[in-house]
Amino acid sequence: MGGGGPASEANEDILDKTIDFFQEHVLRQGDQSNETALEQLKDEQISDGLRRAYKSVTGHELPIKDKPH
Image (cartoon, rainbow, N blue to C red; front, side, top):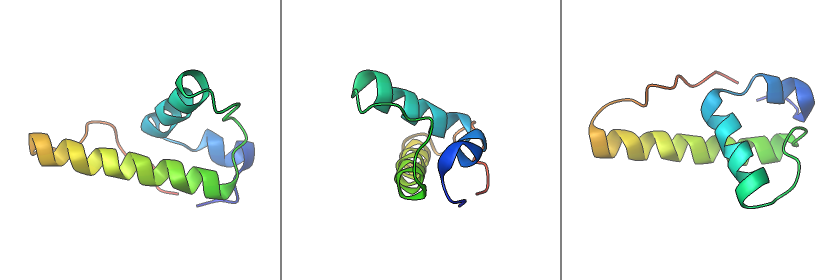
């Protein structure tokens, strides 16, 4: 994982971006476009958990590919 900031945000996969959108617009946690490395790590852990849950329920990998960090 990079050091956070806009450059690292640009490298997020669509699932991470969806988590950011949810946090910003539904949970109203503020702007998610310049997160620290720790905040991005938290988002990655959430997306990894969602991927595991999806596979557990469906038996298939989530069709959204995870970008390496």
